[in-house]
Structures are given as structure tokens and as C-alpha cells.
Length: 182
Ligand SMILES: [Zn+2]
Image (cartoon, protein in one colour):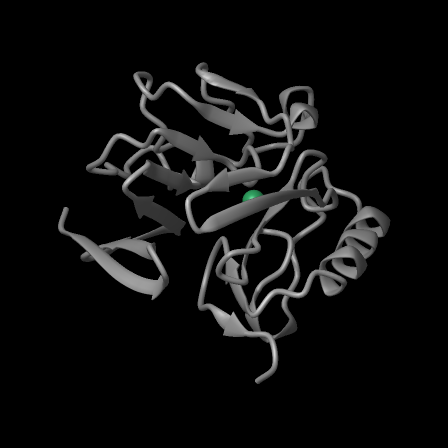
């Protein structure tokens, strides 16, 4: 599989693989190390070892690519007890402390945004203005499915919360990226 890296912001890349589709995988890389956001499905071979892997939720198409040897893999605590279908919790995943994380020019803030799953999160990089929205919000006004054990009311509340975040570029878990103001 040929890895394609597309730069989307300062020190931030969208990973894709020639000839195959999986969830969007994002990489923040600088002199301090590598942070991966989501990991694709089990057929995804991410050719790097992240210092930290942050999962937006527990669905297999986002978590399956996590390798057993990765040391810091974080998932919201509610996802460990969430019983919806298609959930695949990597054995090495630990509860995300959800505390802001400074990483050089990046400042990651974590938002619990249930609805698609109970433990879905969004990650806002205050340094670059990017919002990694997992399967909660997509481009063109599309929103996450709630028929996989999710909750529609919770999703609406999460979408309202997202609208208060002053992000510039939406970086969803699938499909294309979208600038907030056209
Ligand atoms: Zn999902």
C-alpha cells in the first residue's frame, strides 16, 4: 500500500492509501513526535509508530488499524462500555483523560460529543483551527448516524456544542474536509 500524505495545515497531514478507502486518518508531526488521529480499519497498515494515537470513537473502521505495540492509545471512557455494533476496542486503548494537550504549536482540546456513539469525541486544535470531528459531523451538513446504538437527542446537543467551537476547517472521519465559512 502506497501511503499518500496531504498537508492540510501547519505540521498536519491527511493520510490516505493508494487504491483503498478507509476512515480519514490525520497526522500531526513535529520535532516533539507524532500524533495520529484515528487509525483506519484492520486492513490499514499505517507505516509509522505514533507517540500518541487519539481515537474519535470505537468503530472498527477507525480503530482496527491500531497496532498492539502502540503505547499511547486513547479512547473516551464511555466507549469501553458502549455496546453498539461495529465497536472494536483495541486491547492497548486507555481512557482519554480529556485534558488539553500542548504539543509545540498545537493545543488540542477534547470535547465529548455523544450521539453517533456514547463515547464519541471531537478534537479541536486551537493552534491551527482544525476540528477533527470523527463521525459526529461531516462536510455539506451531513451528520453522524444514530442507528448504530447512538442517540439522536445527544447528537443534536453535540452538534450545537460543535457550532460554538471557533474552528476554521472541519476534518471529519470520512469524506472531504470543509472550511467553516464557505
Ligand atoms: Zn463511526
